[in-house]
Length: 169
Image 1 (cartoon, helix red, strand yellow):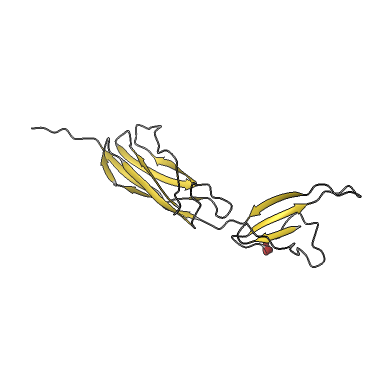
Image 2 (tube, rainbow, N blue to C red):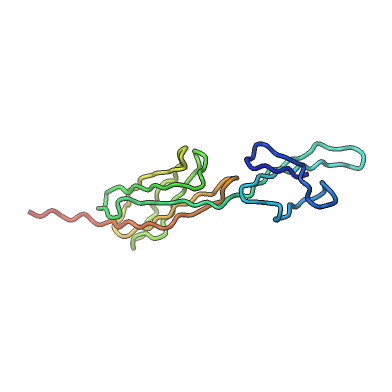
């Protein structure tokens, strides 16, 4: 049997899946679902005479999400720090992991990349990063989503890292 919820806490039902029965459907038709719905299905095994212990599974129809990214400053001298920050929408729970990818690194190549971070209670995240080579660095952030919202990747942001110029006097 299928039970529906809009908040994942309180479920109503069982829902009528077809016009002639309430039970025995292992697949929920797409026409019955909406973005943001939560569903609980209960399956009771039966050997013909005795019911077994019911099994329960939860599923969600996640909303699309977005993640923003800013990188500041856009130009730094080697040894400087880049601040990476952004927001996930719709609001996520505090403690959601955010990961960073380097889509382009300087010509020499590097294995260095920003460490992952976690969102705060306002769905915001921030991290700092010290590029280890001069050149153009292109960053992207992403998160894996949760039951309520799907995964998303940010637009790319670039930072130019220059070598320090000697001070001649």
